[in-house]
Figure (tube, rainbow, N blue to C red):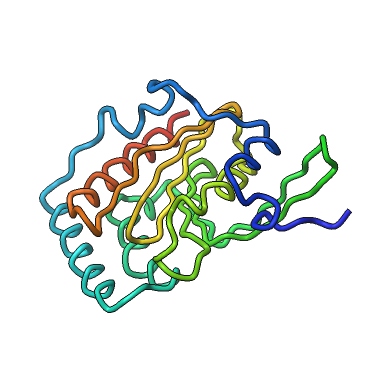
Length: 208
């Protein structure tokens, strides 16, 4: 049977939950990583984040941005500030995925603008062509991509962004949960919070 594109097969959260037998956690303790014991930022970090924010606001004020521009202006520099381009992290870009669904004998495939770091931290830039698309629109497909992780026996994390907004997600043992949506476009301090969470998650995925 030929494969089906993830973006065609999984268009709602309900479809993702049904096809992959997932459920959304209802307990606050499930995804504590985005709120507890976040690392502090140095004065240099804050200065670099302020420059990054000012630059993004300048270009964003001219109109909606393509995903490649979002990656260039804010995602890549943010990952660099957070230390995710440095050893021992390895980056894979535009990762292709393949998911076998044994109960329906279907194969899903796809390719998303994503950076995979250490196979357990996925940075996903929306496949939508402009920043006007909500981060929520990519959540069903993101669940599919996280399911394709080779390390499903351990927690896997993702961050979705369209540049304006950031959303963190955790998947573990067929259960998932999300953070609040951070909106640096509205509140500059949210960019610092996103950086802190990225550093915290990077520490977690490096744990043996």
